[in-house]
Amino acid sequence: MTKPVVAIVGRPNVGKSTIFNRIVGERVAIVEDIPGVTRDRIYSQGEWLDTEFQVIDTGGIEIGDEPLLVQMRAQAELAIKESDVIIFMVNGREGITHADQEVAKLLFRSKKPIVLAVNKIDNVEMQEQLYEFYSLGMGEPFGISGSHGLGLGDLLDEVKSHFPDQVEEPYDPDTIRIALIGRPNVGKSSLVNAMLGEDRVIVSDIAGTTRDAIDTPFSKDDQDYVVIDTAGMRKRGKVYESTEKYSVLRALKAIERSDVVLVVLNAEEGIIEQDKKIAGYAHEAGKAILIVVNKWDAFQEKDDKSMKNFEQKIRDEFLFLTYAPILFLSALTKQRMQHLLPLVNKVAENHTLRVPTHVLNDMIMDAVVMNPTPTDKGKRLKINYVTQVAVGPPTFVFFVNEPELMHFSYQRFLENRLRATFELEGTPVKIISRKKND
Image (tube, rainbow, N blue to C red):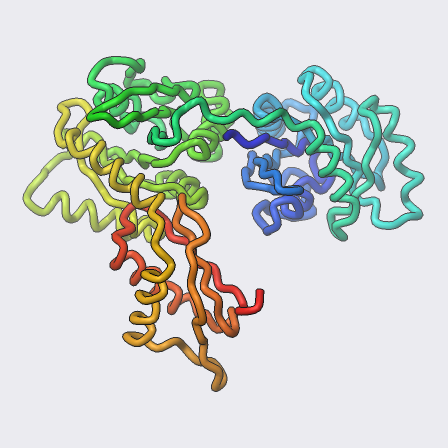
């Protein structure tokens, strides 16, 4: 099920990043009182009244020909194009500016639902300042205060009222949905063709050939799959380029719809910082992950230690993906391709593993005997009970006497024991600590 997309749009320095952080519940966007500090789109997840949605924080739209302003405008236009609902933000203290009017004209052309948010309305006395903004022709203006968190409930109620009906995926629940992500020219389309055994996707040496996510259903050995090929994700400074206009957001949508994510690396080029950022999207989404090193046939100066050394580089660089198996292959020569789908099946099964409660608690009690719980200021963590509350990824709730006593190092120990006992290769594991009475 695809989540609605909300874009926060407006000229620079009206408080978009502050509102973005309020909606997603954490400090993701850079907040600084300097116009233009947010220079590209930032994506995250929001939730309101049990409805999840994606939020895009855009660089401010500003009229002008300076390169930075042109890029920021392009970013915002792409976000508008991809969104279901637009929050148009203005500054209540400054009133309507010429730039606000120009942004309004741009938004009118989008034909998207628009909710007008007048920021920096910090108290009741300032409510009268809202009347001016009716002249923008955007309907009722919603007075909010990013710094104080006022008025966001009414704003999000209005935003939610414009969400499109969510459509269920057309695939059988037993179908394994595979998303391929990676920067341009790592060979994702070639990998799709090798999986399918035929040329179903255009393959080119030109970076950015794939412009959109493409669903391709197929079956092998009585298992149904859908492979979702996505446009390559470039480093942030180049996202606005026309050759890959919507690649990042669409890749995020592909990740969201997938069961298993293949993080595709290029053996010839090695690992760069952007590879880690791309993999981070899948990790944060809680998806099963498999790292695929493509073009292994073209790796120069191979010897009996090359694969082991490359794998160690991956482990050193992708510290947050210690659970992800690594497969070296060549989509071009079909080298080791026969191992790919069996490994996809394995991590997909692990991602949906459900452990019986009594088995889980016996295992945890044995782990505590092996490594006693930590103490802090004379008080010891006591684990009363453990239960699995979700799959995809496996999520475990530990009911304890004091959640703050669950040190991250001990939580990591428990996760490692869970992985060793139940073979949770390829999937994240979530551990939640709650007070016994909660």
